[in-house]
Length: 330
Image 1: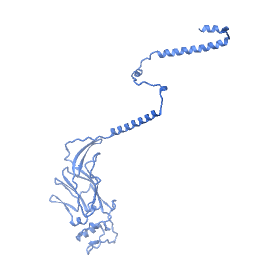
Image 2 (image 1 turned 180 degrees about the vertical axis):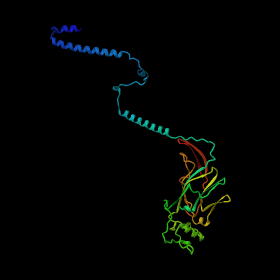
Image 3 (image 1 turned 120 degrees about the vertical axis):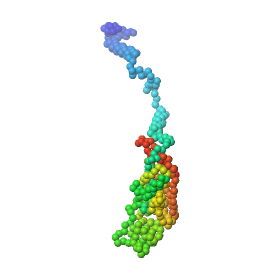
């Protein structure tokens, strides 16, 4: 075929009655050669594509692809499709977050078992505020069914004096040198000056007069009118009582006795109180204290409050190990 073209370029020919020069024939022949060369290249590429690929491990994975691919030329993007995509993404995000929160939530499983820790002490954590009782007027005592008594517990129990506004007090008023503060109703020949709150109360006691009604008025006492009792008390794991009571506590013949003047009670011994904390055992998550936040207010006269508490020993197994506590009902 190439020789016939080259021989044609050497002479003049006529085509359909028109004279054709040798240069024109040469240009047409060159274009024909380029076309034939491109055709051969395409045939070669097609033949290579038709040859089967050598099977490989990754190539065999294509046989398991059940999701047929669509060419980009056949895809159309619309606004409705975009809205559906955004809604789907938001739904997936919400589901993921909710499932993750559920996964991270600690599940509490309850079951009943025998309590084998009766030989251990039970720590009782208390934090109670008495807005109208001075710390030197009350004592914290414990009595249990085995006869063990703890009188006016100190050490682990702190008594904090409070002002009338509930803030911590810096103490009673200190009389200056040479100052003589009045003994008020107890003023007599023996008690001319009462420069401290204790001297004022002693003067009233010697005169046989109740003094609770003047504690929040007298200059010697009015800067410490309330008391906050906070700390831990360890008791036996048996039935018993915790007392926050008026007067002096003693033990006589194995019995717990509170000594006070009955006139003090009727004079305005105000037992209004607020529970900030009351726990039996360790503090563990998920165990609530029903009395926390409870407040009782005595509007007039004196009052006495009793709380009957039933404990349920609880063993809590958490990430930090076991914790012994008690749930309670009131």
